[in-house]
Image (cartoon, rainbow, N blue to C red; front, side, top):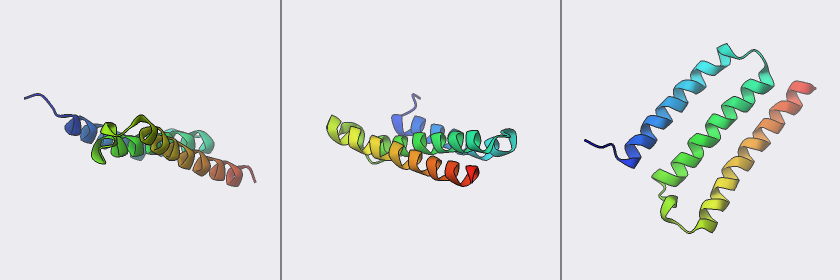
Length: 87
């Protein structure tokens, strides 16, 4: 049986969730760990938006806007954690 696109997305989300659990004890630098965790979160968010909310079939403008929104939220979260870590 050939896996469906949603099955592949589901497996990827599970893998990223497991990576999110395993990263904090393995990374010693807090800013790098936060960047890695927020990258995982952005990847999961984009995968959910494209596959489960079916934005993959939407016009490119909508895909771009929503993907940019996910990345901007992750960047602002990292910036906030960086400011707290540096103070």
